Image 1 (tube, helix red, strand yellow):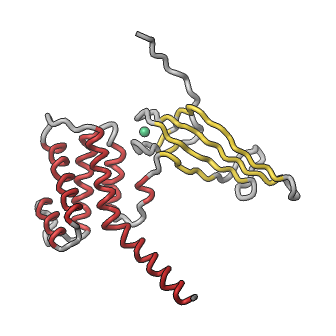
Image 2 (spheres, protein in one colour; image 1 turned 120 degrees about the vertical axis):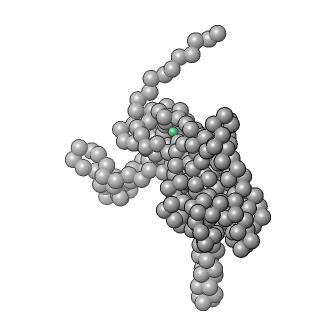
Image 3 (cartoon, protein in one colour; image 1 turned 180 degrees about the horizontal axis):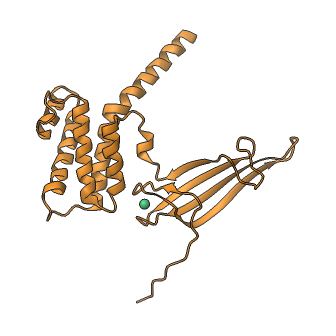
Length: 229
Ligand SMILES: [Zn+2]
């Protein structure tokens, strides 16, 4: 058998948030490259530099692609040649929790937990996804009594037409696998299970919290453009 060797990589100076496991850590630089644009026509040299990096997370061993933009005009350089301000963009994977802007704090907290644990402790992650679902049920007043059983809460939301049939089924799937994670120590829970539940949580979050805001935004935009016409 061939001998497996590991490569020594330099680490980043600052910390990055891993899009796979959620940890905030300095990462191994697997490779990097710069793209620079120079413009000598204006008075001073105006130039922009983008640094692309493939970073390996020390915690979950997954790859994150990062773009760091240095802009000579918008980010002043101090006397040591360091930039005051740079823009960091996560190209892969895009960090979802940052993309959802309208989550109640209890929902957001369980969501962040489920993401953070999905690779390292998938069993704990599916339990967090179930907690997330329960937080959504309570936020949407699924029952007069918050201590009501979650199965009843989901069915109540479906009856009140807050969940269409497909999302009701998604919610029950999260509930059942979350129960397995919480109460059946011998049941196997895989990374794929944890990721699938997170994808279902995404679908519910988009439907319940994000889509209504986006629809409103477009409706307002259409109203304004009618006024201008
Ligand atoms: Zn990671």
